[in-house]
Length: 126
Image 1 (tube, rainbow, N blue to C red):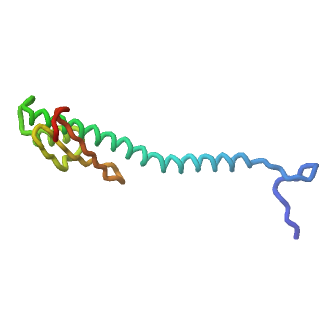
Image 2 (image 1 turned 180 degrees about the horizontal axis):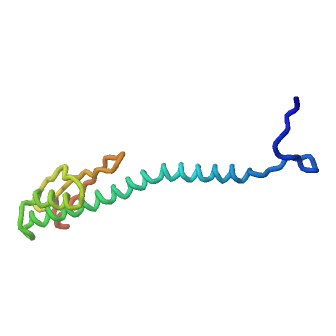
Image 3 (image 1 turned 120 degrees about the horizontal axis):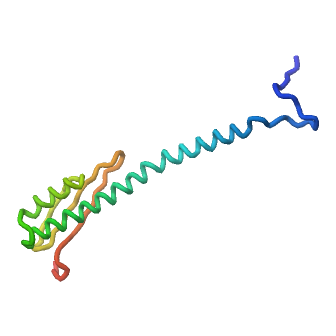
């Protein structure tokens, strides 16, 4: 019993390559989807880390302003409110005179991100 291909041979003896481009296209689409599945979470974590850093900066500035008397309120309570408005959680708030040091935590699916910031007058020795 002889086996015959569904497509006839070419006159020069080579097989017909019809449909090969479909296989290559399917492979390329699969590779693009796989690469996207790897890059999207990493880029999301990068954006989340920048958001956490910005929120930490804002919270530290608010606490330093309250500590120096530029704005009314309790420094760490104000820092916590600012952190919440920016979508992060205030982890710690420490004051050293007019200097405020804060740490925040942001939740990104698959990653736990933290950021720290320090704010106060530039001439302060602490």
